[in-house]
Length: 398
Ligand SMILES: [Zn+2]
Image (cartoon, rainbow, N blue to C red; front, side, top):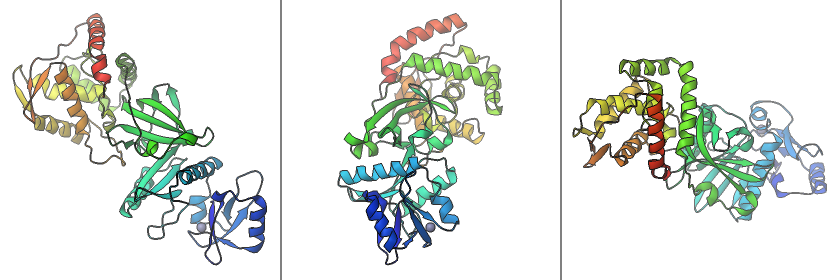
């Protein structure tokens, strides 16, 4: 803890960079109390750790606030000074009595109050949701920043993301998905943006690093995302992931495999039009190969060229699949007003650009031609090559 109160209610915040002598002087004259539980706390001024307050007795409060790592304390202090430098009114470890929550930093920007949480250790989805909800109900915008040490990069543009990571995903005004993190050791923000997932765990991402010394609050609240995805890299990783789960399918993947065999389809001979990176892919946890094949089976194979089908029809079959747990939706608590079906719509519009269908009015499409399926691996590879060349620019453009 970096904040405590004196007997007469005055706040002492160690974020002000006091000199050690000043703090020693305070310590001789004052007693300090925890602003949350009111218990006595000691001012620790050792040389090993950062100066901080510590509860004498154990208890609930100690559990929730004192397992803080130096990484966490350093980080919130740096973020706090960063806000002050921009003349943004900020309070370190502000305790909101009404909701009994203590964000790492409370600040006000453009007449909106924010609760900043610099989260350096995994917490359950339940706690994340509870805190988020109570901030929102009390009029705060929750700003969750992930401790960068929680991010383990696989390759330059690929990251393994767990359900915990997905909790932090936010959306820019333009609709791009990003995950903000901060590293107090390197003193930079690390934004993962243009996140397009291709399996339960893995996603394509763009890394952006912003040194805290020369970046402003807007870079965090509404960063510019200009993500581009390389279609052949995407396809390479997607196929590798397919290979993996096809060897040891779970029950859901198994029922998918059964279904496509019944239709005389082969997972390894799907056309390049199935399994494409759509912008909102991360809203659906199920692999794009699977849910896009379902769109093909439920809608496209049922139609002949010139037939019309409605968006509602597509939506109904999508929800049926969700109801049967053949398609799994992701929990993204910070993404509001956007529906997982958007990913399917993006896919339909992509197929339209390939000339496979044409939009008719607001809520219907006409099928122009069916997607041809390759008969051999060789044919598939050839078609992929042509397809990627033709559509790389169109697909990667957001
Ligand atoms: Zn306490």
